[in-house]
Amino acid sequence: MARRAVLWPLGLMLAAAAQAAPPPDPERLENLLEQDCGSCHGLTLRGGLGPALTPEALAGRPRQVLARTILDGRPGTPMPPWRGLLTEAEADWLAGRLLGGEGDHGDR
Amino acid sequence: MGTGDLLRMAVPALVLAGCAAVPRGSGDLGLVVERASGAVQIVDTSHRRALARVTGLGDLSHASVVFSRDERFAYVFGRDGGLTRVDLLRAVIDRRIVQSGNSIGGAISDDGTLVAVSNYVPGGVRVFDAASLEPVADIPAVGRDGRRSKVVGLVDAPGRRFVFALFDAGEIWIADFSGGPEPRIERFRDIGRQPYDALVTPDGRYYIAGLFGEDGLALLDLWHPERGVRRILDHYGRGERRLPVYKMPHLEGWAVAGRRAFVPAVGRHEVLVIDLEQWTEAGRITVHGQPVFVMARPDGRQVWVNFAHPDNDTVQVIDTETLRVIHQFSPGPAVLHMEFTPRGHEVWISVRDGNRVEIYDTRTFDRLAGLPASRPSGIFFTARAHRIGL
Image 1 (tube, rainbow over the protein chains, first blue to last red):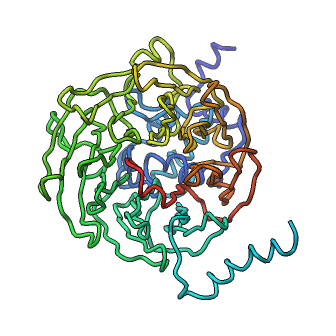
Image 2 (spheres, rainbow over the protein chains, first blue to last red):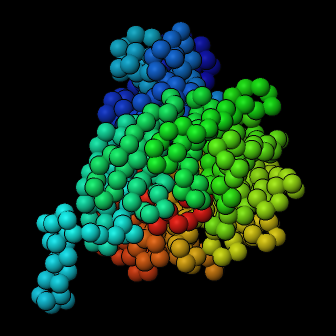
């Protein structure tokens, strides 16, 4: 069982993770972004104690890397890991939202 | 309560509402920040009601407020670098400037003539004339590494001084304006990693910065700055695993009760108790979540605590004599801030996601009233005007 999971391609694993958890709730995530991310990154995400998270500031950052940072945090900085509070699918939705300025377009 | 009592209560309210020419004091007024809508409500704590709403204050996430010595004007520091002087009696914006790109807080000098704003980007402190909001001084926060640092924990201290900490550089600076508009700057290096906020004790003597990058706090005696910064409680989390921190805790002068200070333990479900004479740990109180605000009722008998996400629907009350949690309740989703009336008989609590401000009796814990507010965050009463470090 475990060995099979290791052999799964990344896409399938993400699909499996997405299936296991309920789909991202845009309203809840928008609120989280504004209120909770915003407490460090600014209500308008133009930066605070944490850096700016506007599409311009994040230009060129791969979506997967952003989702990973959301889930695992940045050791040595105040950015906490959100794993446990957010699912993989929700972190991915947030990363897409930050890069594109609006929600999940389905592209990775 | 009989009908006569009700009538007597209603009369002053009608007089105030109906006749703008009636003079009134401002000692029972305050501001409620409406975080997302760039507005503040002017509130009357005697009658537990909103008097007016002032809009056009910009991005008010993490906004804070100080008051003029006459308690008529509020200086509102917005995240977008806006500094707004609100006239509480006329309920209008008196003056407003946008002084930088990204600010975090401010302070007013003991003589009421200077307003200082601490900025993240570009990191530093700017000082303005409190009456005109004209610039007086600009203090870039360049640390020993030669880089500009975000500034946190800006407070006023006696002697026309401002004290603040450099988050990135790990320094504490004193800007002394006693000689005029050109400040004398005193820098303290290597105070610890990533100071995240600071408080000055209500007597104005001790500046205490909390550290995010390591355990412990940095202490500076403002009566004896020549003695330098010393570390206190640096053992408190040694060897223990810290929880992820979803909301930076705050430090405020309110946290002092008698000879003890109560401060949030970063990344732990604990409130730390500091003995202000020995500068040692006097206790640790296990609480419901990671504390954000730890505030003593003005008489020092109770300490009220709110918490970070995901425990931010709860408030706990600690008895400062026994160091025990004596009351716990849930005002609603996302409790952001608490403010006591000047002598502490009531407390106002902002419930952001409930879009309400709830008012409680601090002795019986009964809920007395609730006021609608749009995403309320900070609550600030004018009595702060006469407190050092607030």
